[in-house]
Amino acid sequence: MRSFLPAPAGTVAGRTEHSLCGNTGYDSVVKGYAMRFSWSDRRALCCCGLLPWLVLLGGALLQSGATQSLEQPRTNDRDGARMVFVPEGPFIMGSSDADIAAITRADPRSQPGLLANERPRRTVSLNGYWIYKTEVTVAQYRRFCSETGRKMPEPPNWGWKDDHPMVNVAWSDAMAYARWAGADLPTEEEWEKAARGADGRFFAWGNTWPPPQGVGNFADVTTKRKYRTWVVLDAYDDGYAETAPVGAFPKGASPYGVLDMAGNVWEWCADSADPQNRSSANAQQARFRSVRGGSWSNYGADFLHAARRHRKEATERDHNLGFRCVVRKDAETR
Ligand SMILES: [Ca+2]
Ligand SMILES: [Ca+2]
Image (cartoon, rainbow, N blue to C red; front, top):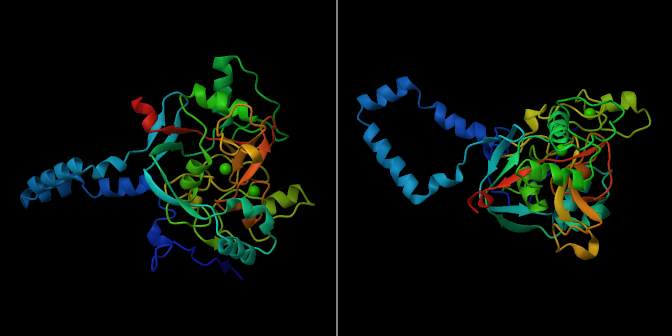
């Protein structure tokens, strides 16, 4: 029987997951508005004399600044990565004790003690930024190596596959790539907002656990066929034993249309994760760095919910750990 997590505190009362456009994607919403004005529609509007009013309305929106937050998706010319825009404004970050209890109830295999560092649940406001729609791929990283003379790391045991996420990279490798691409690694705040939107949902896809089929690449029955002693999601089959091609699960898109924010590979963030050194984000000497999102080797709600905070030694290279980049709107005007 499928269990459903209660709506987190702070969710707008009376709205369903669907009304919060969980799987439609931010860019799709923008495109949806554009599609309504076909040429035939425009002719009809002209005939009715509405066009001048539309022009006036557009001018008023521009003057009010209302359109400034609706930045279009764009491509990073450096590496060809597709990026979606996360508009400025507040979102709900972290977990309350009640949230942690709800996750543990929905998935009794969860370890609530590991989630204590997500507290408190709070409102955080960020400036606008673009984030890569998918994890950086093997092909993109290979090109970076080719142009900079950097050596590719050892491949995972399934070999390098061009459209799969890059793995086996240390934090400094990921940061070097981001700089080469004219970008940065996301902060934990940027990563979490891109994953769960502004409505305080637990997972990128909403509040449903176990996950609906097709929302991401996790430790599943396909994984179990290859790694027979592993614990997996017994009723979930995504078809991939290890990594999957990036962006293969559009049903799991975050409210902004960002893909694989749960599963496929963990993602390096910019932040220091030294327990005594949390405030010095980006400190080059940090021994530990934050990683977010879980991977193809995780099966639990405790690992796959969007607020999960995990860390790795910055020099560690792992077959389930990659990254994606951000480009900040304020960085473009400097
Ligand atoms: Ca899988
Ligand atoms: Ca991921």
